[in-house]
Length: 322
Ligand code: PBG
Ligand code: ZN
Image 1 (tube, rainbow, N blue to C red):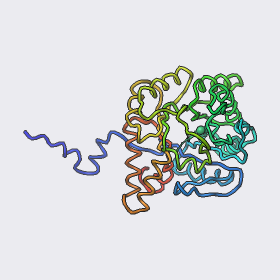
Image 2 (cartoon, rainbow, N blue to C red):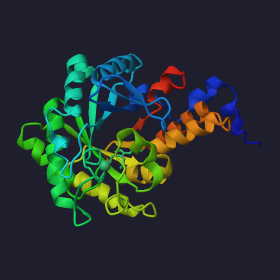
Image 3 (tube, rainbow, N blue to C red):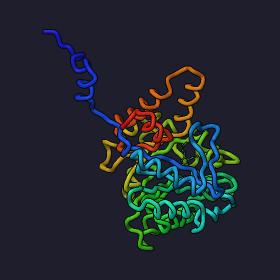
């Protein structure tokens, strides 16, 4: 007897029959960079991605909803920055205003997630409050909890802290619960490595650190167990969903975290992963459309229940997924 595994790869219909993984619009979370000024400002380092004013954001989300993309992740690009990041928790800031507009327009048809971090709001670009050259954990956490509350008050469904301070999940949970927002979820950036991964994003959000780097709060890419340890702490503190970031570089961690807990797992297909494919495509060196799809499907195969990706919209419009 000769065993022929190729029988199951014979036709498209048979391949579809035995496919173990799929990718649907419902799995995708589309990021948005929102600004006060009306209009659309393309980001050089991220082809296809732009900063948008509130009106333009609402219009684009309406189009995305028609494609089946039901989740957005909002990043604020504020007009003003300061040492103590006061605008991060301004009820009239760009993120709360956008959340309110989106919820008014789309209600529960849309899931509004908001990034919670200070780096776009501090004048030095670090993700927390700097004291004596070091990001002070507990002072940062107090402000981050106010920021999460402000987003909850504006109507956010889920807040997504990306700052990497210790104890922020518990602090946000307590602050939101105190004010009656028990039903607002927390998507924790639980495992987040430091490095060059986020370069294009920092152009989009204007959030690059003006001195030093983020290695005293984001994780060392040499470590895996450290990330799992922190992720399990986030569960104890009350996280609802755990994120692994960057995704393609951490397929092992997506898999291991999935095995280690029972929460839904989100991965972030980050800006450098997206832009690297776009750059190769522009140079004519690779098939960008196919490669982007293959990256997203590998994130699903590794165990991602959902994926934050800049390629969400084109995944549907270009027919990679239905
Ligand atoms: C803010 C934040 C970053 C990303 C998500 N939230 C940048 C950073 O940590 O410097 C990166 C996303 C991407 O690169 O696409 N802390
Ligand atoms: Zn940050």
